[in-house]
Length: 445
Image (cartoon, rainbow, N blue to C red; front, side, top):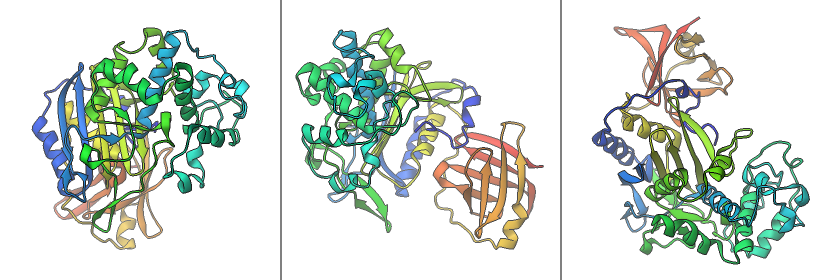
């Protein structure tokens, strides 16, 4: 979740230049994904609080062939945490909580509750074990649970580490924060979401989720299997609560992030505290780079839904994607959208190309360690387990799929490596790495 935009983190070192937004090309990119069944999703771009681009591809409900549109609601998973954090900071602004308030005031039976503060819950430093990591989770995730049952479940969890000694992602902490909002206000989380955020920003399609209703333009989620979209398991929304139970649209997520970051929901002091990073975690929010600029936002995943969002303060731009079916990498799609929006060089993928087969003897000719003058990392290419693999400095090795004798891809990260050619001869000493609009030449050492 902290490496949202690039496997190699190549892009953060290069500055953006302002260019004209090519809506036609962005349409073509998304329609290309749809035509090849790579994704079913909606995209929203919000500039200075106004929607400047909306696009939906694929079905909200594949069974009835109901197409998604700009009002389709998706489960947004952990983007919910930004909403929860916002409401907690509103209560802090109102003097009803503080970052130093002890968890023991509300849930004293949780392990180490007397050592855990609201601040630690917000930035994943509580040590409370993440219940969604347990094998048992898959056996009860579809069944409704009461608040008392969820609290009892969390009270029974061990502590993974001493509070505030380090950070580790915990849905358990944000379920508790959602309950604390209810305890402090004497109202439901769903009602507080409407009063504190949705009504203030005129968000009409943002709410606490329930059973999915296609008739209400709510998306069902799907996995890609045997060249078809198969319905995914459906989590009961009483389980994720303040950690992941909100449904929304990408445009409304963008308007929410814009409102949050421009002072419409919490005080300037609280916003500063929310954005403070410690061990890579903010308080209910993350930071990520794109070409020298910084965005604040969050990703989300629940069932087969996946989503991502960010707000670039320097541009007043919010971007959000909500997907209910993915057979591609969300990271690569987000890079493509931002690259096109910013007028950067970006090649729409050619999904009609088919992989080719190379013998191990042929693959051995590509082996070597390569370096680039443009970026401070080396890439080692070698044959392993019958596959040609690449490994960048400090990264895990990954398989390269050949599409010709000169072109190799790693689709999960949107990486294309093209070796130089002269006529029909391959120059095994140099290749160009293309990723997310960037193009970098590497030469064998």
